[in-house]
Image (cartoon, rainbow, N blue to C red; front, side):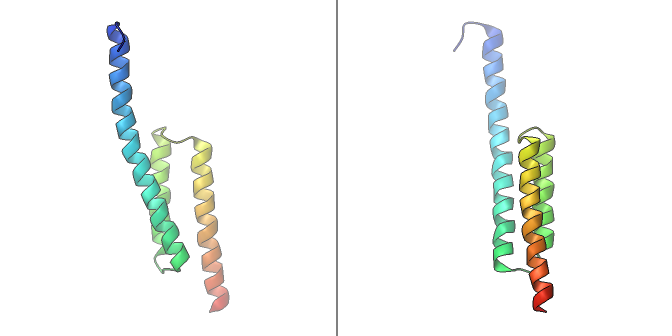
Length: 93
């Protein structure tokens, strides 16, 4: 620990933010995993699940937890997979 009060306060604040950010990151990763599992399984509720995942990713991005380019990359990959699945369902039907 530092001998300066302001440095100690900054360290405490950083630790609080780290813990909050960790829970948000965990929630994002879980939602992405669930959505990708539904995509792989060809589940019928894949569109709703992907929209839920994108929403949570957007919220994490607005809080500054992830870089905006990472947010865009995650969303792009998710939508691409969902569209490919839906296109294959239409061709198969």
